[in-house]
Image (tube, rainbow, N blue to C red; front, top):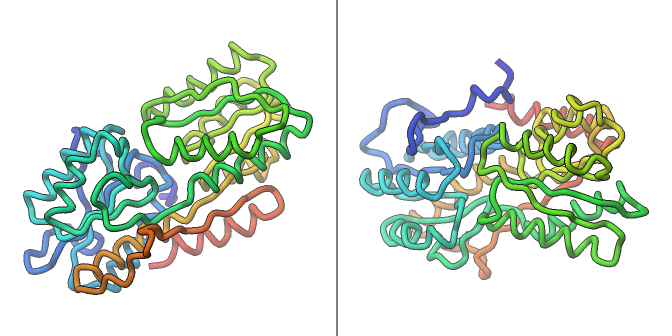
Length: 322
Protein backbone atom coordinates (compact mmCIF):
# COMPACT_ATOMS: atom_id res chain seq x y z
CA UNK A 1 0.00 0.00 0.00
CA UNK A 2 1.38 3.42 -0.87
CA UNK A 3 2.43 5.43 2.17
CA UNK A 4 0.23 8.36 1.14
CA UNK A 5 -2.97 6.31 0.87
CA UNK A 6 -5.55 7.74 3.25
CA UNK A 7 -6.20 4.26 4.59
CA UNK A 8 -2.89 4.55 6.40
CA UNK A 9 -4.46 7.12 8.68
CA UNK A 10 -6.22 6.08 11.87
CA UNK A 11 -9.69 7.58 11.75
CA UNK A 12 -12.22 6.96 14.50
CA UNK A 13 -15.87 6.22 13.95
CA UNK A 14 -16.72 8.50 16.85
CA UNK A 15 -15.48 11.80 18.24
CA UNK A 16 -12.50 10.17 19.92
CA UNK A 17 -9.81 8.57 17.82
CA UNK A 18 -8.20 5.22 18.30
CA UNK A 19 -4.56 5.47 19.33
CA UNK A 20 -1.74 3.46 17.87
CA UNK A 21 1.34 2.86 19.94
CA UNK A 22 4.41 3.43 17.82
CA UNK A 23 5.94 0.23 19.15
CA UNK A 24 3.21 -2.11 20.34
CA UNK A 25 -0.61 -2.26 20.21
CA UNK A 26 -0.72 -2.95 23.94
CA UNK A 27 -0.27 -0.28 26.57
CA UNK A 28 2.85 -0.77 28.68
CA UNK A 29 1.85 0.09 32.24
CA UNK A 30 5.45 0.59 33.35
CA UNK A 31 6.12 3.23 30.70
CA UNK A 32 5.10 6.86 30.62
CA UNK A 33 2.84 7.77 27.71
CA UNK A 34 3.44 10.64 25.30
CA UNK A 35 0.60 11.54 22.94
CA UNK A 36 0.68 13.31 19.57
CA UNK A 37 -2.75 14.75 18.74
CA UNK A 38 -3.51 16.20 15.30
CA UNK A 39 -6.35 18.38 14.03
CA UNK A 40 -7.83 16.69 10.97
CA UNK A 41 -7.39 13.49 8.95
CA UNK A 42 -4.88 14.26 6.17
CA UNK A 43 -1.93 12.52 4.51
CA UNK A 44 0.25 15.34 5.88
CA UNK A 45 0.24 13.56 9.23
CA UNK A 46 1.70 10.37 7.77
CA UNK A 47 4.99 12.26 7.58
CA UNK A 48 4.67 13.44 11.19
CA UNK A 49 4.00 9.83 12.20
CA UNK A 50 7.36 8.84 10.71
CA UNK A 51 8.92 11.41 13.02
CA UNK A 52 7.18 10.02 16.11
CA UNK A 53 8.33 6.53 15.05
CA UNK A 54 11.95 7.73 15.07
CA UNK A 55 11.43 9.29 18.49
CA UNK A 56 9.94 6.04 19.79
CA UNK A 57 13.06 4.15 18.71
CA UNK A 58 15.14 6.60 20.75
CA UNK A 59 12.81 6.60 23.77
CA UNK A 60 12.40 2.96 24.83
CA UNK A 61 11.15 3.99 28.28
CA UNK A 62 8.15 5.80 26.82
CA UNK A 63 5.01 4.68 25.04
CA UNK A 64 4.19 7.03 22.14
CA UNK A 65 0.62 7.21 20.86
CA UNK A 66 -0.74 9.00 17.79
CA UNK A 67 -4.27 10.39 17.68
CA UNK A 68 -6.33 11.57 14.70
CA UNK A 69 -9.83 12.88 15.55
CA UNK A 70 -12.73 11.41 13.63
CA UNK A 71 -13.80 14.96 12.80
CA UNK A 72 -12.18 18.38 12.83
CA UNK A 73 -13.56 19.97 15.97
CA UNK A 74 -12.43 21.28 19.33
CA UNK A 75 -15.00 18.94 20.92
CA UNK A 76 -13.39 15.86 19.35
CA UNK A 77 -9.97 16.95 20.56
CA UNK A 78 -11.36 17.67 24.04
CA UNK A 79 -12.69 14.10 24.29
CA UNK A 80 -9.27 12.73 23.35
CA UNK A 81 -7.56 14.93 25.92
CA UNK A 82 -10.02 13.95 28.67
CA UNK A 83 -9.39 10.29 27.93
CA UNK A 84 -5.64 10.82 28.03
CA UNK A 85 -5.88 12.63 31.38
CA UNK A 86 -7.96 9.79 32.80
CA UNK A 87 -5.20 7.39 31.79
CA UNK A 88 -2.47 9.51 33.37
CA UNK A 89 -0.67 10.69 30.24
CA UNK A 90 2.76 12.22 30.90
CA UNK A 91 2.93 14.53 27.90
CA UNK A 92 0.73 15.82 25.07
CA UNK A 93 1.70 17.54 21.83
CA UNK A 94 -1.37 18.94 20.06
CA UNK A 95 -2.35 20.98 17.01
CA UNK A 96 -5.44 22.75 18.42
CA UNK A 97 -8.36 23.20 16.04
CA UNK A 98 -9.67 26.23 17.90
CA UNK A 99 -7.11 27.39 20.48
CA UNK A 100 -9.24 30.20 21.90
CA UNK A 101 -12.14 27.85 22.66
CA UNK A 102 -9.81 25.14 23.98
CA UNK A 103 -7.90 27.15 26.59
CA UNK A 104 -9.65 25.52 29.56
CA UNK A 105 -8.96 21.91 28.54
CA UNK A 106 -5.43 22.77 27.40
CA UNK A 107 -4.71 24.35 30.78
CA UNK A 108 -6.14 21.30 32.54
CA UNK A 109 -3.72 19.14 30.57
CA UNK A 110 -0.86 21.53 31.36
CA UNK A 111 -1.62 21.27 35.07
CA UNK A 112 -1.20 17.50 35.03
CA UNK A 113 1.23 16.76 32.18
CA UNK A 114 3.78 18.37 29.88
CA UNK A 115 1.87 20.25 27.18
CA UNK A 116 3.32 21.59 23.96
CA UNK A 117 1.67 22.67 20.74
CA UNK A 118 2.71 21.83 17.20
CA UNK A 119 1.55 22.96 13.75
CA UNK A 120 -0.84 25.57 15.22
CA UNK A 121 -0.10 27.39 18.45
CA UNK A 122 -2.22 28.28 21.50
CA UNK A 123 -0.19 31.08 23.10
CA UNK A 124 -3.00 32.04 25.49
CA UNK A 125 -2.80 28.61 27.12
CA UNK A 126 -0.22 27.33 29.60
CA UNK A 127 1.59 25.25 26.98
CA UNK A 128 5.33 25.12 27.59
CA UNK A 129 6.38 25.66 23.98
CA UNK A 130 5.37 25.50 20.32
CA UNK A 131 7.13 23.33 17.74
CA UNK A 132 6.29 24.23 14.17
CA UNK A 133 6.17 26.72 11.36
CA UNK A 134 6.25 30.50 11.55
CA UNK A 135 2.94 30.62 9.72
CA UNK A 136 3.00 34.34 8.99
CA UNK A 137 6.37 33.90 7.29
CA UNK A 138 5.07 30.85 5.44
CA UNK A 139 2.09 32.92 4.29
CA UNK A 140 4.49 35.51 2.92
CA UNK A 141 6.23 32.76 0.95
CA UNK A 142 2.87 31.73 -0.50
CA UNK A 143 2.23 35.38 -1.32
CA UNK A 144 5.51 35.50 -3.25
CA UNK A 145 4.39 32.47 -5.24
CA UNK A 146 1.10 34.27 -5.94
CA UNK A 147 2.93 37.35 -7.21
CA UNK A 148 5.09 35.18 -9.46
CA UNK A 149 1.98 33.42 -10.79
CA UNK A 150 0.13 36.71 -11.38
CA UNK A 151 2.75 39.37 -12.16
CA UNK A 152 0.07 41.65 -13.61
CA UNK A 153 -2.45 40.97 -10.85
CA UNK A 154 -5.77 39.16 -10.87
CA UNK A 155 -8.46 37.66 -8.66
CA UNK A 156 -7.73 34.92 -6.14
CA UNK A 157 -9.71 32.67 -3.80
CA UNK A 158 -8.28 31.05 -0.65
CA UNK A 159 -9.40 27.67 0.71
CA UNK A 160 -8.87 26.20 4.21
CA UNK A 161 -10.48 23.98 6.82
CA UNK A 162 -11.31 26.66 9.37
CA UNK A 163 -10.25 30.21 10.12
CA UNK A 164 -10.53 29.41 13.84
CA UNK A 165 -7.09 27.75 13.69
CA UNK A 166 -4.12 30.01 14.36
CA UNK A 167 -2.14 28.71 11.39
CA UNK A 168 -4.97 29.54 8.97
CA UNK A 169 -5.27 33.09 10.27
CA UNK A 170 -1.52 33.60 10.28
CA UNK A 171 -1.00 32.23 6.76
CA UNK A 172 -3.71 34.45 5.35
CA UNK A 173 -2.14 37.39 7.20
CA UNK A 174 1.25 36.65 5.65
CA UNK A 175 -0.27 36.35 2.19
CA UNK A 176 -2.01 39.70 2.54
CA UNK A 177 1.24 41.31 3.70
CA UNK A 178 3.14 39.90 0.71
CA UNK A 179 0.63 40.97 -1.94
CA UNK A 180 -0.02 44.43 -0.46
CA UNK A 181 0.43 47.08 -3.13
CA UNK A 182 -0.08 44.63 -6.00
CA UNK A 183 -3.10 44.20 -8.25
CA UNK A 184 -3.91 40.80 -6.76
CA UNK A 185 -7.36 40.79 -5.14
CA UNK A 186 -8.46 38.10 -2.70
CA UNK A 187 -12.18 37.65 -3.31
CA UNK A 188 -12.85 35.51 -0.25
CA UNK A 189 -11.68 32.62 1.95
CA UNK A 190 -13.79 29.45 1.69
CA UNK A 191 -13.80 26.99 4.62
CA UNK A 192 -14.77 23.33 4.62
CA UNK A 193 -14.69 22.20 8.26
CA UNK A 194 -12.17 19.48 7.46
CA UNK A 195 -14.57 17.77 5.02
CA UNK A 196 -12.55 16.97 1.90
CA UNK A 197 -15.66 16.45 -0.23
CA UNK A 198 -16.78 19.94 0.74
CA UNK A 199 -13.27 21.22 0.06
CA UNK A 200 -13.56 20.03 -3.54
CA UNK A 201 -17.14 21.34 -3.81
CA UNK A 202 -15.94 24.76 -2.64
CA UNK A 203 -13.50 24.85 -5.55
CA UNK A 204 -16.14 23.70 -8.02
CA UNK A 205 -18.56 26.35 -6.79
CA UNK A 206 -15.87 29.01 -7.08
CA UNK A 207 -15.01 28.03 -10.65
CA UNK A 208 -18.71 28.14 -11.54
CA UNK A 209 -19.45 31.45 -9.82
CA UNK A 210 -16.21 33.09 -10.94
CA UNK A 211 -15.38 31.52 -14.33
CA UNK A 212 -12.65 34.09 -14.97
CA UNK A 213 -10.90 33.66 -11.61
CA UNK A 214 -7.13 33.69 -11.99
CA UNK A 215 -5.72 31.92 -8.94
CA UNK A 216 -6.77 29.33 -6.33
CA UNK A 217 -4.79 28.97 -3.10
CA UNK A 218 -4.95 26.01 -0.69
CA UNK A 219 -3.87 26.85 2.86
CA UNK A 220 -3.98 23.34 4.35
CA UNK A 221 -2.41 20.10 3.16
CA UNK A 222 -5.56 18.55 1.70
CA UNK A 223 -6.88 21.75 0.11
CA UNK A 224 -4.36 21.89 -2.73
CA UNK A 225 -5.05 18.31 -3.96
CA UNK A 226 -8.79 19.08 -3.96
CA UNK A 227 -8.13 22.24 -5.97
CA UNK A 228 -6.01 20.18 -8.37
CA UNK A 229 -8.72 17.52 -8.74
CA UNK A 230 -11.51 20.04 -9.33
CA UNK A 231 -9.51 22.09 -11.83
CA UNK A 232 -8.57 18.96 -13.81
CA UNK A 233 -12.12 17.60 -13.74
CA UNK A 234 -13.55 20.87 -15.06
CA UNK A 235 -10.95 21.19 -17.81
CA UNK A 236 -9.41 24.32 -16.27
CA UNK A 237 -5.84 23.02 -15.97
CA UNK A 238 -3.51 25.67 -17.33
CA UNK A 239 -6.13 28.41 -17.43
CA UNK A 240 -6.22 28.96 -13.66
CA UNK A 241 -3.13 29.22 -11.46
CA UNK A 242 -2.74 27.16 -8.27
CA UNK A 243 -0.59 27.82 -5.20
CA UNK A 244 -0.66 25.62 -2.14
CA UNK A 245 0.80 24.39 1.12
CA UNK A 246 2.47 21.12 2.04
CA UNK A 247 3.69 18.07 0.19
CA UNK A 248 0.69 15.87 -0.55
CA UNK A 249 1.56 13.40 -3.30
CA UNK A 250 -1.05 14.89 -5.65
CA UNK A 251 0.32 18.37 -4.99
CA UNK A 252 3.81 17.25 -6.00
CA UNK A 253 2.39 15.50 -9.05
CA UNK A 254 0.52 18.68 -10.03
CA UNK A 255 3.71 20.73 -9.75
CA UNK A 256 5.62 18.24 -11.90
CA UNK A 257 2.85 18.44 -14.51
CA UNK A 258 2.89 22.23 -14.47
CA UNK A 259 -0.73 22.42 -13.27
CA UNK A 260 0.27 23.74 -9.82
CA UNK A 261 2.68 26.68 -9.70
CA UNK A 262 4.22 25.86 -6.35
CA UNK A 263 3.70 24.93 -2.71
CA UNK A 264 5.12 26.00 0.65
CA UNK A 265 6.22 22.87 2.48
CA UNK A 266 6.68 22.49 6.20
CA UNK A 267 8.57 19.73 8.01
CA UNK A 268 5.90 17.63 9.74
CA UNK A 269 8.51 14.91 10.32
CA UNK A 270 10.27 17.34 12.66
CA UNK A 271 6.96 18.25 14.32
CA UNK A 272 6.55 14.61 15.31
CA UNK A 273 10.15 13.91 16.24
CA UNK A 274 11.03 17.12 18.07
CA UNK A 275 7.74 17.18 20.01
CA UNK A 276 8.35 13.74 21.50
CA UNK A 277 12.05 14.27 22.22
CA UNK A 278 11.40 17.65 23.85
CA UNK A 279 8.62 16.30 26.05
CA UNK A 280 10.78 13.42 27.26
CA UNK A 281 13.62 15.79 28.14
CA UNK A 282 11.28 18.15 30.00
CA UNK A 283 9.75 15.24 31.95
CA UNK A 284 13.26 14.16 32.92
CA UNK A 285 14.05 17.65 34.22
CA UNK A 286 15.85 19.22 31.26
CA UNK A 287 14.00 22.43 30.52
CA UNK A 288 16.84 23.86 28.43
CA UNK A 289 14.96 22.66 25.32
CA UNK A 290 12.32 25.36 25.93
CA UNK A 291 13.34 28.50 24.00
CA UNK A 292 13.15 31.82 25.84
CA UNK A 293 10.25 32.88 23.60
CA UNK A 294 8.73 29.37 23.83
CA UNK A 295 8.83 29.02 20.03
CA UNK A 296 10.86 26.34 18.25
CA UNK A 297 10.46 27.39 14.63
CA UNK A 298 10.89 24.71 11.98
CA UNK A 299 11.85 26.26 8.59
CA UNK A 300 9.68 26.06 5.48
CA UNK A 301 10.64 25.74 1.82
CA UNK A 302 9.13 26.66 -1.54
CA UNK A 303 8.75 23.74 -3.94
CA UNK A 304 8.16 24.42 -7.64
CA UNK A 305 8.98 22.68 -10.90
CA UNK A 306 12.70 23.39 -10.48
CA UNK A 307 13.11 21.26 -7.35
CA UNK A 308 10.01 19.06 -7.07
CA UNK A 309 11.72 15.89 -8.35
CA UNK A 310 14.58 16.08 -5.87
CA UNK A 311 12.22 16.94 -3.02
CA UNK A 312 9.92 14.03 -3.84
CA UNK A 313 12.82 11.57 -3.90
CA UNK A 314 14.10 12.79 -0.54
CA UNK A 315 10.60 12.56 0.96
CA UNK A 316 10.28 8.92 -0.14
CA UNK A 317 13.53 8.14 1.63
CA UNK A 318 12.29 9.76 4.84
CA UNK A 319 9.05 7.81 4.78
CA UNK A 320 10.81 4.54 3.95
CA UNK A 321 13.20 4.85 6.91
CA UNK A 322 12.45 2.58 9.84
